[in-house]
Amino acid sequence: MTVVERVAVAGVDLDPCMVLAAVQAEHGRAGFGADPEASRATVTVLTPELPGWAAGDTLHLAGPHGPVFTGRITDRVLEHPEPGTAAVTVTATGALAQLGRLKVGDEPWPVEPAQERAARILALADPPGGWDVQAPGGERDVTRRDVDAQTPLQLLTDLTATTGGAVFDTPSGRVVYQPLPARQTPIFGLRWLDLDPGLRWRDIPWRWRDAPTSPASRPTVPVAACLIEWEPRWTSAAGTVINSARVAYGPEVEGEDRPTEDASDARSIDAIGEREVRLDSQWQDAAAAAERARRIITTQARDRWEVDGASLILDDADPAVLDTLLGLRVGDRVQLQGLPAPSPGSGGSWVGLVEGWTVQQAGEASRMVLRLSDPLLSLAVQRWRDAPPALRWQEMGSRRWRDLETWEAAA
Image (cartoon, rainbow, N blue to C red; front, side):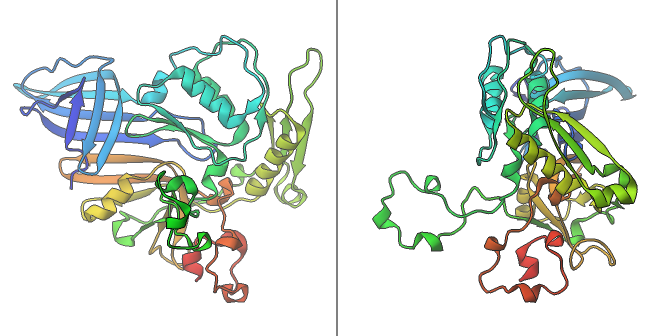
């Protein structure tokens, strides 16, 4: 099963005399809380003639299930596996890398909500593939900013350090800022903006409370055990624990320390000692800083089991499953099924949030490696109001709220 069938350089498709030998495309970031990383692709072709590709040329990879990578060539390697045949390997980086080579911010910026600051940065950067700010609301104000030109990538990195959000580029080349609240409601009801603009209220055949889910929802994607190449490795380490958080906030005042909001977990400190983080945030007020400190402690004061990557075999997947898997984006929920017992999770399954993924293709063999994070880190936990109406809490048995993965598994 091939997921990459089209290679276009500088808008020109791969010459038929070239043989596509190997492809790898990486997207997303290393894990929750990691700095933004530009997507990256490596392509090797076998050819009797040296192609005229050069650094800066656009590289676009696509297949029957949509785009796989969009970026610009940065490196080339030439080898000769046999006489008369050249193996040309090109490496390209996505749109985020281009945001690391510009400068913006040569004028003062006002106090504004964090998602509006992200939109301001992206609008000034104007990435060629476009940009998007997922804005479900809930982000507070960040401080005003004096004239200090920096790269858009650095400005977005600093912003996500404050907010806990994510920045990534997509296979189509679009740059996205994802606030943390955008991860907490992957399935939500129909919104008025989801309907046809010309639709009138009296023409709707159902009551609003009975409306279907929004088409913008991102439901949990099940991954059957038959697609998992080998058992994922479970890891849990005290080094991931943060049980004391200090978050500075407010504008800089010369000669004065910025005020802080603190939070800690006494039981965790007693058990493994203090593990502190200090965050020099951009939050404008104490309430936002306090909320950030509490969130860090709520989600990271205990060590949790996590999956150290999940390798999926795509060769035997049916087209509908491939469409779903190759359409995954950062923040989507994935449920790994058929895991051996005993293991964390519920009933042999575990739900994680996608932080990044790698697509690999050699000849006609294809696989996908998912980098997943514990949903608790994003506070993407189940809400009772989203439970099936007929479900009663006593039917949950011995399961704890923090270990719930999907209501489907509980019903």
